[in-house]
Image (cartoon, rainbow over all chains, first blue to last red; front, side, top):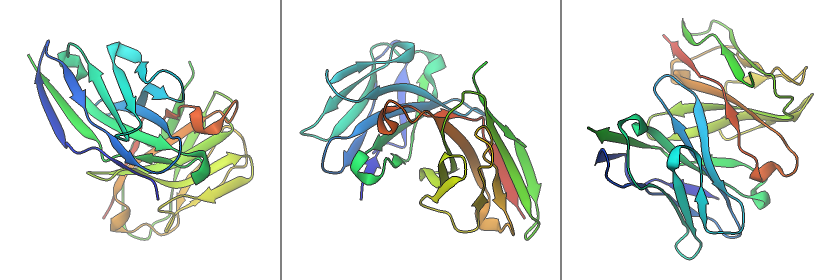
Length: 114
Length: 116
């Protein structure tokens, strides 16, 4: 069965510093990978996705993610974090072979301090 | 404005009292889904629907029902709620074409349910 792991429950970073949120998945085959962000009292918002092609994907709000097939990872990055990036981030994976089921990681809370 | 709406946003109820959480989308999406969010567990799928009158179970369907009589609406029904259904619920929708797997989902604002 496919699964997604976000190994850090929380990431703390100072404003202006690089931000990385880790995500690994377990499944064989070619995955479709997504990152979503959840701000307080809001639904999830789509940030970016990897379907095929270039391993480096650019998304909304200056975020990017790198697909690494050999390490089965899809880490989310931002070169310079803002206080407004403080939120809950979810990685998700989908496989055609698994009936297109979308599986989410447990979420990582990001706290950006001024 | 393209959006997914849910009602109510907050609900406190008692064990056994039937309730319905409504979900509506205005984007003409074929696919709709319900999730529950619990701390540390991420989002788990309850039910999904590929189109009108087509619904199927997700990972945690026990204690829930859904219906899809119209394309835009996908209500979640708890016939006899129990305290273990206390959670944050999200409705989501997306297009099926050009490929279901590669399309992102659009989420509603969430419904926080407490069952006493």
